[in-house]
Length: 379
Image (cartoon, rainbow, N blue to C red; front, top):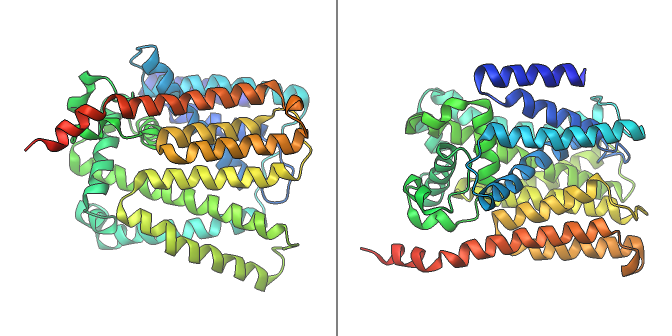
């Protein structure tokens, strides 16, 4: 079935230019290969979230590699490269007999509920007035400069085939030239996602792109709330929590709602698009840390790779959190291995690569600082 789906998605890619089929197959295959142990993190919804974010974060790594190799890649190439890596992981998991079935149960519905309610609320703010009216979309998000600049960055990346805008020849695509040094990690992921499902976005006019940006932004909001829900239920399970009891479940939902309205929605409405991605990485990383802390996994597995991808994506999206996440990962591996010598070489190698991506982003920001200041100081 996986081979048939893979061939069908490649046919769709060749016929329409849309890589959505290959993207979906990659996510399903990776979710199938992820371990299903644990009551919360082993649910189908949690595994799909981890798989989706892993694929999107890997596209950021590919974009940096493409720039370093001076290759003008395309969203289809990013998706194909990710599918090759996922296919290798899926084959290895099948040979080891570690793939797990994907079933939808009561726990999955409970985890999905908050994200569906919040995203449904913001979609209703657009659809109820007029889903064809871009002004209702602007009212539902924000018309401030931050939101406008993030939308312009995403638009520039889509028009540049999701390639990083570090090269001076790509700067004319930017609405604001000084934003060329802004960490574009989460924008890159969504540029590939948008171009995969809608190749016409590259030539869309601004009114149509506002609609696409709103959909991407609401999807990011849903990812944040879903990651927050999984983390909250995972923390509650440490205290003997059970979803079968009404009042404990209601109290967990209350906590999720409190954090969502106090922190998440404020970033959403203020237009800090990158902070949504940053919250997703951090929440997922903390969930995996909690899961790994109580397990005696001295080796290097898929979840280790996901945690290191969170470090890398965080560095490419907003610099300051990456060192803390990387240090936390090494502390977790030291806790599992007891001594530095027993930490797997793959963990050291992965940590070094994540650190190199952090240094790349530092170089990108500092290398263009002088030109960015001169642009800001211009009349």
